[in-house]
Every structure is written in C-alpha cells, then in structure tokens.
Image 1 (tube, rainbow, N blue to C red):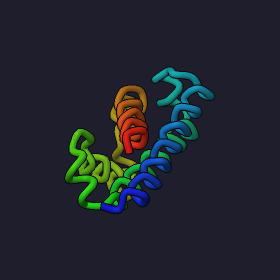
Image 2 (image 1 turned 180 degrees about the vertical axis):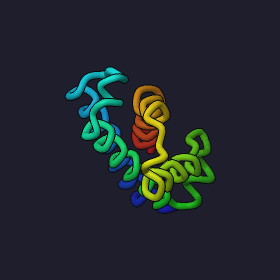
Image 3 (image 1 turned 60 degrees about the vertical axis):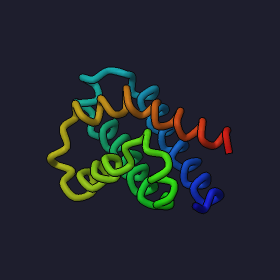
Image 4 (image 1 turned 120 degrees about the vertical axis):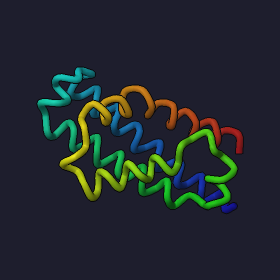
Length: 115
C-alpha cells in the first residue's frame, strides 16, 4: 500500500466534499432549488464524478483494507454520472450530498489523522 499516495488522494476527495458543501451553502439546502437549478446540480455532480474517479485511484490494498466505505459503489455512481448523466435521479444525488457525503469526508479525515 502506498500510504502517501493514498493520503494525497483522500486529501483531494475531502476537497471535493468541501466544494459540494460550499455549493449547497451558496444555493441553499433546499431540494426544490436543487431540482430547479441546473448549475447547482451540475456543480455537485461534477464533484461526485471527481470523487468517484479518485476512489478508483486508491491502491487496491487500501480499498481492500478499508471496507467501511463502499468504494465500488462510489466508482459505479461516477460511471453513471459520466456516461448516463441524463438518467441520474436528482433525489439520489440529493441524498448522497446531504447525508452520505459527510460520512465519506469524516472517514477520510479520520484515516489521515491516524496515519
């Protein structure tokens, strides 16, 4: 496992999580606004796409050792955003950015603090 490389990737993932939080703060934490505003949705989806791309760059040893995060599903959602964007349900994106994203960010921060 390349600890420094994995930590660098996790650091970038945290930054994208924070960018989504900033976007939500800018537009407002309101599902109706999210659905009505393409810029809001696109900004969040772009960050989710980047997080998914980064998750695939983590070492296989890291992903195998740290299974509390659904790395495969994160990558799978990245593929949906990249290749079938028109089919992405706003409700799913909203749930990810308002409930699951903070868990990912906290997990990444915890790992970095321990190493």
